[in-house]
Image 1 (cartoon, rainbow, N blue to C red):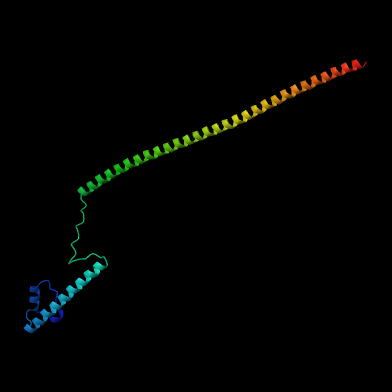
Image 2 (image 1 turned 180 degrees about the vertical axis):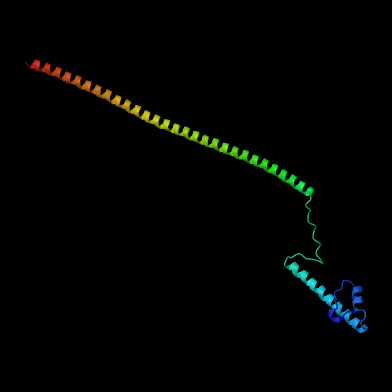
Length: 182
């Protein structure tokens, strides 16, 4: 016989509960049954309230007992072999990817070097074109200046020749007049 102080009202089944209260008077049994119903009702209401709070706070709802934990993988030769094979495959794939990345990087470096060479070549060509244009303009200007100087010198010589002729004419005319005056 169980004492009322240690009577468990949350027995899994009604049969166990009835066995636990067997031996008590009918009035006591009825009181224990009412008390058990009240405790179970309160626990059910508390569980519902907890589920509502869990939903409000975004926690997962657990119903009843948690499922038993999954058995851990055994360290057998089979699992080790699979692990080694997967590790080897991963290493091979990683090496392929590294090789592809090295090749792509080498291609980029080569393209960059070629592009820089093209830029330097284009710069040198433009610089040479500008230098040629400047030098040809300077040469044209010097040629024009020499032509103008030559034309001025030619005019000056002609003018000096004309002056000399005029002097000779004047001298010749002066001699004629002097001779006539005598």
